[in-house]
Length: 444
Ligand SMILES: Cc1cc2nc3c(=O)[nH]c(=O)nc-3n(C[C@H](O)[C@H](O)[C@H](O)COP(=O)(O)OP(=O)(O)OC[C@H]3O[C@@H](n4cnc5c(N)ncnc54)[C@H](O)[C@@H]3O)c2cc1C
Image (spheres, rainbow, N blue to C red):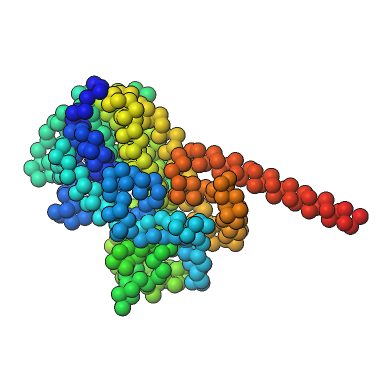
């Protein structure tokens, strides 16, 4: 297959990545059929599963722009310009993300973003969606997917020219690819899980905290964060070990919840009237990193988004990376003139090294946010980075800025940051050496 524009593309999963890809392929003139296991969120309401809100930055915004959706999505976003650190005694300190006040990450509602993209994809007559259809098997050679209809409990096989698995971290399409010869797969869970809690608006309907910051309660070993929502609530996420002395396992009874929060997050407690109820009733979920490859099989099957590379959420880059996949796949199709076999292989070659890099960064940012964000040394380091960035803006870009406020590919950003750090360290050592020599000379 190659060169044609009317291939029938099956996308499994109408989550964020699948919905955006449907828009981009629809715009490019392909026939797209999307199968989603859940009900249509526009009819049945948004069904929870993952975080209620999420932060999008430059990479996701660029992808949304290609689908003509950036403005609409940003209209409903709340800009977060830095971290607001909450100390164990309730003191606040704000750490801007960048020297440039326009650099911000944007809190958006996951459900609203999904609905916006589903509506946009529906504008294309060549894109159709089918909800309540769970993919239960994939015939890789045909290729075809077997779907279980949640209403009728019947299964049917549907054939396409290409099947794209955009079905998330526990992808059914990827599961079938496991059976392929030389398919690599690695899955690692953090010892921590997460639970969502809520800070409602104040009695006069205002935000209970500064909405233009990502709030962090770093406690070494565990932490809580909060992102603002348009309805003036904050969604808090508690990242906590599953087992051990301070853990989900240790705090399970009603009587344990309040004392724990009063001791560790004292300033948050008065803002969380439903704390105990939310803590006891909201689910505890796990955090997984998935690496696999190749993400494609001939011109027939491919993986995209979390199905290809689920990462932990601590750099706020999961969907940014998933949307970048969509952009990359579309570029590869263009470069390879619609030859799916070449395009899919090129897409995998281009993206894999970068998604591996962001997976590593996401884990190291967890340790940084959890253990160091509150320390003076960390704050000095961040201030130092901003000073060097201000002095040498063409040459020095802090790693966080490269990841969140630029589209420099992730692995290149990591390499550039290492180079910069080596040079800055060498310069600091040289300055120290000159000072030392001057001191000795002066004493002599
Ligand atoms: C707590 C938390 C916070 C996060 N915060 C951020 C953040 O701030 N910024 C950010 O960029 N990323 C964040 N992420 C990551 C982000 O949520 C994911 O990267 C993103 O949701 C991946 O999108 P996706 O469409 O690839 O997969 P998913 O969102 O998982 O969507 C997959 C879709 O496929 C459907 N599906 C699954 N299996 C089947 C099947 N067998 N048949 C048919 N349909 C199926 C699902 O119902 C779903 O609709 C966070 C993740 C978590 C867990």
